[in-house]
Image (cartoon, rainbow, N blue to C red; front, side, top):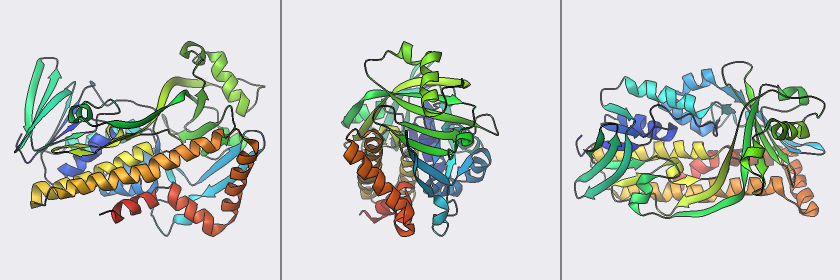
Length: 401
């Protein structure tokens, strides 16, 4: 590959979105993926309005809309008393052509991006190729990789690390991953039982000091779809217990009805972090998505923020490679996306979690009353939705110079 080309480490949705945004400009791109095929990570599955707009501009929006479930209304609930506030994204119809959350598993987006990339002569996607290192010089980077035949290397102008929270690219850059890990883990499971029968909207958050939860629909194999539910798990409880039928049934029965059992399609346990890379750029290496920042899933902002990284970065890198723009614009990418992640994604997701788990009854009631008041006031509800839908974060990134 030539020095006007880019290597992307990671074939998740962020890496493939960055590759497509670069390739559509005519830039030669090679994607390296350690796995043998598209990774099927079941954690993320919500796309906010600005993200759908960006994906539509990349030519995959309509296909994603055809597979996903548009969710206009979402709720915040109290475990004991029920609905606290309900919001309708339809009030943002004058700001976006997609005034809803689009629910769809992230690997389906990855498949659509791969399909778009497969038809492009300036793109290679190499599965079972693990990026192991890179060496930078004045004219580009030499990227090392491993595959079934052993070790190899390739030459490019830049490398993008979209290789997840354990990013090899970030570690090679020598960049700190600042932040913390929450003490509790998350249990995530899916049921085919339709929670609408219990009055739930397609997305809902349930506040409780011990067993708060997050609920949202996913299309799965087609209509009517399934419901994914997340609960916090105390550090002292072993995974082997958490994943038993009795444990999972007790969790869902606690928010629905203890009088029946619910079909469980899958279950998993994972740790949750709040971390942001100290730098998103070091020389010819740049970070995007989980390699640059990770957060808890309450608000559905992690994957969305990663797609926003990819589109922002591809535009600026295109200017450098095609228009001889100053590499200062890559520092602007760092400022825009890092600061926006800290100010919005980290702040909002941490605040969401603390709202749901608040133990002080006085503070808890005060915060829930604040949400009731916001939902009841059209102007305040609109402002709240502009923020929670990530429209505000995209605007904020554009303001940073």
